[in-house]
Image: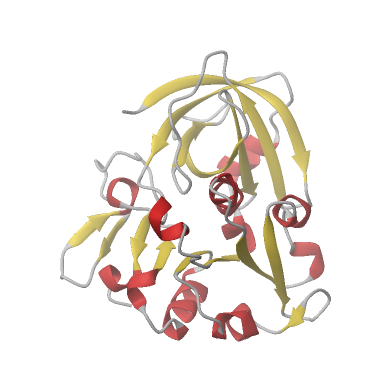
Length: 255
């Protein structure tokens, strides 16, 4: 079930010149939101075109957070929003990350999340959901430099955080795919970020059935009508990222 809900901007925090975080509050309790799902948000002064944004966190029954990178006119409109203003969102959209079952978690399974840049966004919610089950996950965050690292404090409070920066200004120097933790055994790996990075991570995962990626295809409608977010999967069929994703198993994609 999808809902169109008005939210009040409870907080806007600029993280850098290109990234900001919104806390959005509804007057009524929200529907169940699974980690990895997204919203379609309507910026003020837009021509009616909504923007798909990954849900960063859910902190109560009526407050969600969005982590946003300014990349175009739409996200610039969102960056201009002020505390106390109202925005409309359609949610929850898409299929989220498949979580391990309670029985599997009791067997001591290990979980790794790999995020590049703003791709780290959905993992705060996911890490917290696993923490509710008594599981401390590992999160590997990759960025160009230390100043591009996002939500380090928030993630370190609920997960074991590992960092790789290309210039070595924080954590391990080099690309995220060269980090030593990727050589360790994990029972489930989640990945989100630039497509080349996700494909590179998938290439070093021995068991593809354990790895899931969240695609960042261009989405307009969010309900599978416009077909602009179609991807071809291993079976040769076209799948809508907005309705059948954005999370897919890498074996299903044929990576």
